[in-house]
Image (spheres, helix red, strand yellow):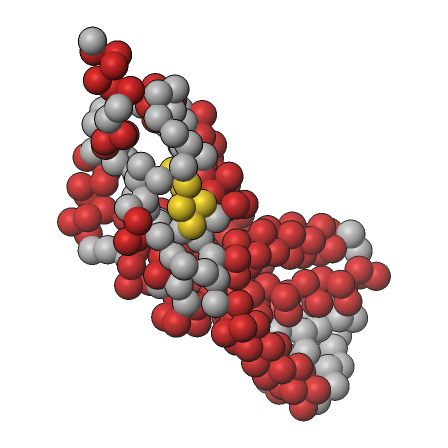
Length: 252
C-alpha cells in the first residue's frame, strides 16, 4: 500500500526522498526554465574563455585570436548583465539574487530543496564569475605583452598605466581560474552526490515539472530582443576599436 501511495504523489520530490526514487514512479514531465540566449551565452563563454587561455600560451603568433576571443567574452558578459535586467524570468537578477540570510539558510539546509532557477549560493557564483570575466575582458583592452602586442585601447593611455593594468589582467586570470574550478566542482557535486541534472538543464533549458510549477515556467526565449542587445554591444565595441589610435609598444 505504501508503494501505491508514493506512485501517485508527485509532491514526494519536495520531501527528503531522492529525485531518483521519485522518477521511478512519476511521469518525466519537464518545463522550460532557462531561455536559449542564456544557454548560448553560457556555453559560448566556456568556449571563448578556454580559447583565450589556449591562445595566450600558444605564442605571440596567436595573439590576434586571443584578442578576438576577448572581444567575444566582453560582448557575451555585457549581454548577460543586460539580460539580467530585461531577460526572461529566471535570467533576471531580481529573481535569484538574495540577501545574506537566504544564503545562510541555503548553507544550513545543504541545498536540500532544489530551486527553480539559481539557488542563493548559485547566484553568488554567477555574480562572481560575471564580475571576474568583465574585469578580465576590460583590462585586456588596455594590456600589453611587453613584447610586440597590445590591446586595442593601449594607445589611449600611458604605457606605465598599461603595464599596471597588464598586471591586474594577469592576477585576475588566476582568481578567475580558481572561481571556475570551484564552479565545476560544485556542478559535479550536485550531479554525482545530489543527483541533480544541472548540466542537462543548461543544455535543454528544461527542469523536472515537479520542481517547476506551471506558473513558474517561461513561455519562450525572447530571441529578437536578445539578438538586438548582442548586436548593439558588438557594434559599440567595433566602433570603439576602430576609433582607437594605433597601438605602438614602448619597449624602453
